Image 1 (cartoon, one colour):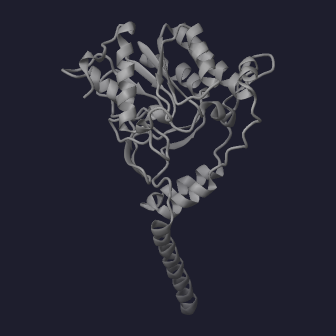
Image 2 (spheres, helix red, strand yellow; image 1 turned 45 degrees about the horizontal axis):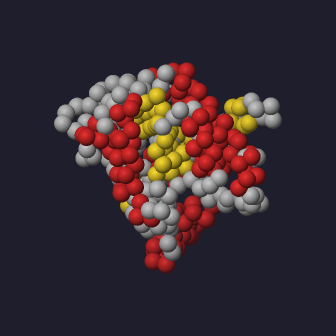
Image 3 (tube, helix red, strand yellow; image 1 turned 90 degrees about the horizontal axis):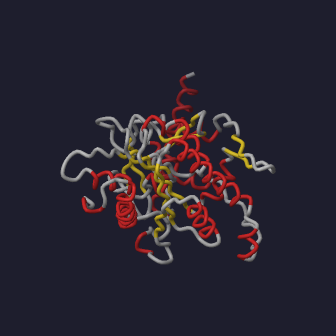
Length: 336
């Protein structure tokens, strides 16, 4: 028995030593895109959502960011008062503020500008979350936004929403035009593995774990065959049809509640840009068009592609310029 225990101990020590050497090798020789714990967790209603009362650091080759969420499961500090009658921001990782630390994401900048010189009566709720499409909008607007009674809803659209809506599968567009909500699948093995890793203190910040996660990420399906711009505009692809229908449904929910809407477009290419412009124009929704990366590369991280602090500052400034038409304070308050 003593010899067996000795062998087991030696095997464990050897295994730990091997892992330590692998960790060192990865840190020295491999560029790992993301190091740090996951921001999201499984949710039976949404599929996933941001962790509540959570704080972490995300390390990438281009930036290090600190992200915190409140008890509502939204990015931002714990509310100090009621959140009704404010601005409800909905979008993906651009709205969540991936790439910038707490307080530098554009919803927080807008809120800080409105609070300059004293307490603001225009609270801000940042319901943005990365790696999701527009189907989540409908759930948020139906299930959570009503309790905030927002004066304004800001909807942010990004190029990858079109693919995310098909991949995520929260809703399906039937041949007869009916938008049908789909059941949420049970927790995946990847989520279970995530919980196991995050149960070990310090392990989520392992570069080796980050590399394994990077390698296991789903690869995008091959792009659809190219079509002429005229044909695409007259016959939108399934992804475009679904996306436009989801956004249209979100606008309808806002109209039913009497919520004003401002749309923000970030780095969307043609012909989808024209499709979105037409949709918002026909529904009388004011539009903020952020410069594309090819136009203003200084606003985007080179490899990661998200907005830098400069990008978020510009987005906040342009949103503030639109607020007076909604009866809200404008940019005269200034950015902090």
